[in-house]
Image 1: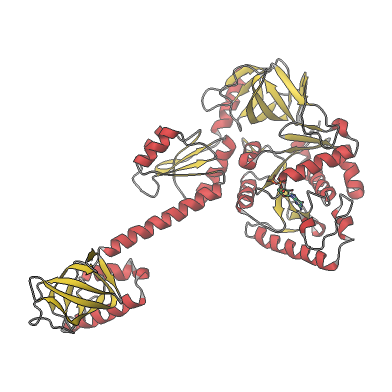
Image 2: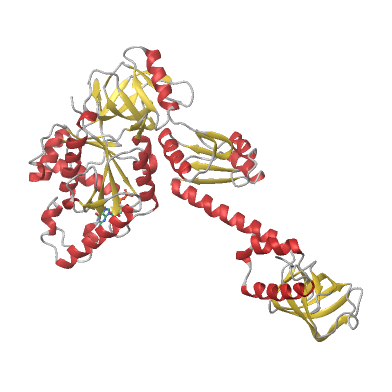
Length: 586
Ligand code: GDP
């Protein structure tokens, strides 16, 4: 038997996922095929008859065997949970929604990477075409029909937007084009302009999905309805009168009331008995918001179903489930293998990663590996004290961090992390975590470099201001101006002959002691060893005497930190030094 393809919908926030799914649902209901359309909280089954009516003649040349499409709507990144299973993806197809005016955004990038990781074929729905200036909404689900009634400049604008998106997608390695220009959907990614709001373009979107399913997925969709049910948990929730229930997608086999099921957890799998299977009642009205569930005896893949059973306390979203009509031990083994199939190559020196679900784990691992960031530990669950302790034992300060992807940081872990100065990067977008981490790393490196640089004797040229000698000697105190570079405390000073006349003990600016004085500043300094009037005079120019090691470090490691004025001071110092030693600094 051929089951419905499972279609995931991914989008950056506000690009129109909810609206599109509502419109697909409503359009199907409007075709008076309501009897077959059901909606779980997370899944909508649209029967093929409704699709045929919406798509009119678009599918007339396609031999259709699929019974419909099952759309999964999971909030935000949780789509990943619904995507992943051992050795691939649960979703057979995906729609990536991109707002026509906003283009590729962080969650779009992330979705593309995830779709690549899980190898899910997808189409791009270029949404909100009705927002293009001058767009005249037509009462049709067809983009091709509607575009006939649009002005040339509107057509041109859409074409330009399509080109822009094609460019952006090519940076991810995808060859894409407007769907009308595509002959082979396996090689080229199709872009379908739509409006989730007016419904224009939905006919083509559905037709392309059905076409792709028929052409490339038939083998994958063949199931034995009597085999063990295989599924994944989308959500675990508390329902009045039922206690803990799970909303799951069943993608293979069938499940009956009374069946034993095995559910994956972080340790031993849960084995429990299905007390009730609940399916939402078919939608009858287009604007029906309340979902009424009715108990059923059996469900067959592919479908969304709510399962009530005892002992669901340890169940979490994203975990696999399987029925155990036969050998329980075998099923338990299968489930354990499924969980351990997410391979984490750990190293002594690496970051600690915590995530909410198995799908998220696989997703973040693939992106972190791509960035060549080593991993010490990667697990499902909130960030706990023991994670902080694990991170603390990492030697490399740039790896002594925790990535928390869509998971909580427990309060005592947060406190401990603050105490140990361990940085936790937490977000619902993997890219955000990686970007924040890279930025932090850069800032830290920069700060460290500046600190190290500040410890060196910096190049400076100064002038003792005439009339500003406050003390002749022991130590000499006088007013100076920094002519080039930056004068730091502790620098030795030399005269135009390259002879050292003393060492800067203190720098004061308006009575306050400061560490350094930059070009242009007029400050008071004390010079240990100098005797004004004897080895140095008012109005004389002096240079810092840079030790050879400092010179080498500065001109190799910190070259980029040297400004023009530093380079000028350095050039003059080099000239003085080479008067005595022509090879100095070479
Ligand atoms: P989600 O965050 O991806 O689920 O986005 P929503 O479906 O909630 O849409 C975000 C906003 O964009 C809402 O204000 C929608 O009304 C609006 N929107 C979504 N699709 C369209 C569309 O095709 N055209 C226009 N004009 N607005 C849209």
